[in-house]
Length: 491
Image 1 (cartoon, rainbow, N blue to C red):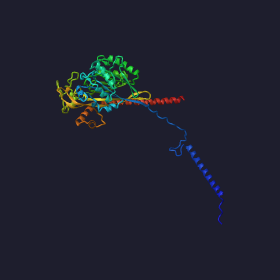
Image 2 (cartoon, rainbow, N blue to C red):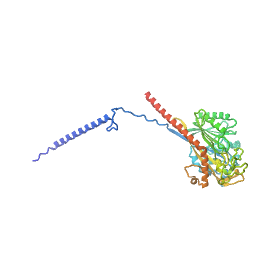
Image 3 (cartoon, helix red, strand yellow):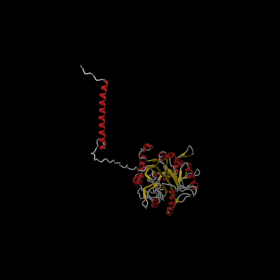
Image 4 (cartoon, one colour):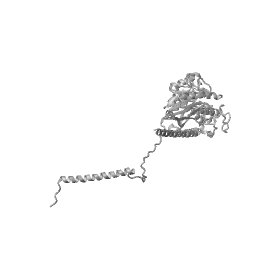
């Protein structure tokens, strides 16, 4: 007879007992594991336990200063509207002039800069009479500069008074009319002699001088540099008082057609560095001169100096320049292919001149008068108020003439068109600017001429400021560490 099954309530009680026992066993195992974790620090230690249960936390590395603003200032050289250039941009349909096409390729680069400055080496005509030497130009020149993206015109130069006092006033009026700032000249003797602009939160001071003496224009005499130094020192102090965090000096100086600065330029540059100027950009030689880093005599300040930014738009192409015959230019007749008294240079057709790349450095027809730049300096402002120059860059610009028209004397020769070619290495010049193979070759010559003069200086300057920024950031971090340590100790 099979055993009788226990009643259902008995079977339920037995199952409940087994569940309770299993639950108790599980709790016991968990307790043992948790205890092991607390005792050893972790269940499966990577390294043998030392028995030290002290908890340590590392101090995080302080972050560098935050950047609160950056501003890039671009500078370009001389605008010389020779008669040949003006006639090339005559607008027959409207009976006026339109220079816009000369700047069409350059405009995207200038417009992309935070603030762009150009040397307005002309006097805007008060009527309808235009000329070069003296340079009296139509208002359309200023319109083209504004449309290209330039924000400021420099009016302290040796051609600002080519239209007399009325011409100086007209030039300032026209710059204002087209929404451009200007510095160098002023309406009244009591007006400010400099300009301070807040550019992206950084206050930049702009000061402009020229050699010579012109109505209500900042000027100096090469025969009395001490007077310049006294005057500039006072203005620089006032600019700092007015909040300028960086100071630019634009100065019209040096010898025309020279490829290197003279003694006066070097002396002025050194003194301006000693007075605290941060960037010097020169004009007037019509050729680019070297870019240098200057250190103050006290050793505690450094200044970027581009001795000459060269021409930007002009009629001084190789075919239009006499080879060293100008009285104010050093003789270049040491070259066997130049000879005294030549009325016409041997580059009437540059492609047939077998010696053109060997012309003396101070010859007028060696191509340097075709070369210009867009010289860019970037400033960075940090959260503690420190402002430092953080980068220097240059865009070489070639002023190309197209459609040569030969005249009896070279300086009367001309071109049908003048086009500014930005020599940006990241683009194909032939495709981007619709250049012929020969024109691409000439563009390459221009690029090489420019970079030979300023490439080394740019490398040195960027390296110097890179080290200065690195030292500043390291010092900032150390100060942060020190402040945190002192705060912890005080608690």
